[in-house]
Length: 591
Image 1 (cartoon, helix red, strand yellow):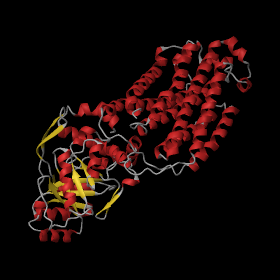
Image 2: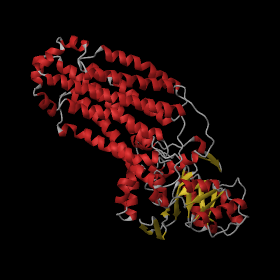
Image 3: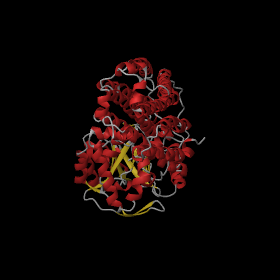
Image 4: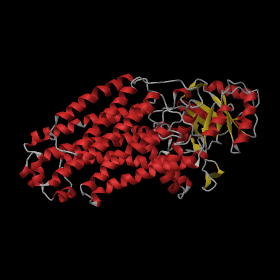
């Protein structure tokens, strides 16, 4: 559930439900999706969550891909554990786990964005073990928080030892440093002692790490953290839990001495994209290494070739429409079609003009992704170009299947292929994860989520539209409004010329595959590219869409094919585009 769907759609609904019910509903739903490889792939596609390798840490013998973890208070029943492993976290806290377990009492104040806990929950040992056994694959470290007396804690730790990368225990669990040392020796696992802001820890203890918890202001929390860091050596890991509402909070904690941070209650209000935003903001604090993928120029030329071909196709669709090789295949001349029914020529012009506009828009997006994304080594930009480009090349199968394959399309395909292959081969160094300057939950950021949602729906709609057009072209070729405009039946067209429908179907195949490819480009750019200050992304959306919309809508008015139902999808897409461009502008154009 990315932020662009959480804030505009799901959060208002979930806040009206009982807190425990809404939490379990969403956690179980997310985990159900994450239970299969297809579901995991979908989550990765929607969020592109993998953090930069720069963030990786090794603490007390455990590898953390990112210092951002999740507090056990967010998922006390472990119902969302499978999903949280895929949401950009570097580790997860389990528990607290106790022998008998206890229920929680809480209520949420949406206006103040606070959770008031009357009692805290703990998970019963047997239930926790069952949930951990159900986890088919452990992707990130699990730190198990244990609650109870010294003997109870020892029993819990022994039971959960195979699942744990470390145990978190309260400092009050042990009566002396020697008892703690004996406990640590018996388990042979990292032991992290938990203290609150009011507690102090004796220097006699030698834990593998310290967990600092608190719900007070961030400034007081940082003061306590700084005091702890001065008290202990730099090598002792200190983990903080809570007080993170936006990326700037996490960076302040990390720069004040925290080794790892856990997101607490405030994560619920900020949204599930917070770990990804923190990872990207923290990545930006590291020295930026100059990266330039050599293959970007070939991808840029690939996009340029598509745009030029689009302009050439636009010129012919606005003049002769029918080319000599079309006449050769049909066995008739352009004037014969006009004499029989001029609407046929206009109809073919509208298909070809729409295709040309889509090609020009697609070429612009390819060029922008190459110039601003792949050139800077961004993995997501290369993935977007390769995915959409491959789908576009496979569209040639549709041309062949319609019984009419003109030599110009074949030549165009052969010209594009070397550019694409060279770009793919020479851009393998483009493996960098993105960074971001977004530090705050600003109004501009929240507004941009509505625009991002519009662009995601737009890209998805265009891709589905491309598939639908291809399927219709492969079966019926025409929709009812087409036949109404032509004032002809397919039988009448066949009677006039039995090769005319294959030519029209061929045009629709070209438009369908191009629309699918461009729809995927828009979708992936919307999913992976919207970040604060990424001006090129906004200009790509704003300018790149103009040729497609101009050709797709204005063409219908030029030929007087203005049926409202037929143009409704185009109007809907235009509305999404306008809202998206307006609402993302303050965020993307921010300097």
